[in-house]
Every structure is written in C-alpha cells, then in structure tokens.
Image (cartoon, rainbow, N blue to C red):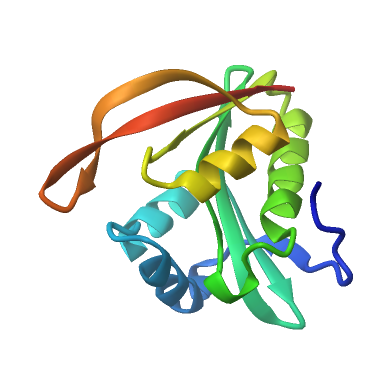
Length: 153
C-alpha cells in the first residue's frame, strides 16, 4: 500500500542553478553519487530533468532520457528526511507520465543489488527485473552489478 500525499510537491524543469541545492542530497544518499558534471551534462543533452519541491524545499528529482520509443530513468532520488512518505512513488508517477507523453512504450532503469529499498519501490510500482549488468557500478573495494528493471507503459 502506498502512502497518500497530504501535500503535493511541485514538479518543475531542473535548471543549472538547482544543482547547488541538489548536490548535497545526492552526496548524502549515495556512496558513489553523480557529479555536478553528470547533472550538467544531462541538462545540456536535453534529457528530461525535473526537481520536486515542497514549500520551496528541494525534496527530490529525476533524470529521464527518452528516445526511439523507450525511456531510461537515469536517476530518481528523494532526500532522506522525506523518504518513506510516498514521494518516491509520486516521482515515479511523474516520470512514467512524462515517458508516456514522449511516446515511450517502456521505461528501463538500473539499481544496485545492495539498494533493497529502491528495488522494493520499483517492484511495488510494477517494474520487473529483466537482466543483470555485471560490474556496472563503482563500489567500495571494487565493482557492483546492476539489476536492470523494465516497466511496460
């Protein structure tokens, strides 16, 4: 059962000036976070980058790449104090709706096997594990596989 949001945050296009506020969230969430350059490159490439704000506070964001009838969710993050309140599901709703609007038939993503919370979120949403990418992610002491998930739209 997913949480029902009492207050709906505002989704907006991510801008370069958002990165200063976004980077501390990214760094707090991941042992190997995206760099400011990764986000800036995504913006320059024209990927669908969105911020999610509650009363002006940045609480989440996503980066979606769509082309050739498919979408790839490259990053979806909710700031730790706001996790387990339904915002991850709400962001997935927004990303899936955007992918549909861009004529994608499927959304793909990768997730670390060690990130059980994200796997549970994606599975509850309807994503299915379809593959494993060996040694995909940098990890402490080496590399970590990626589980590839897909959602039919």
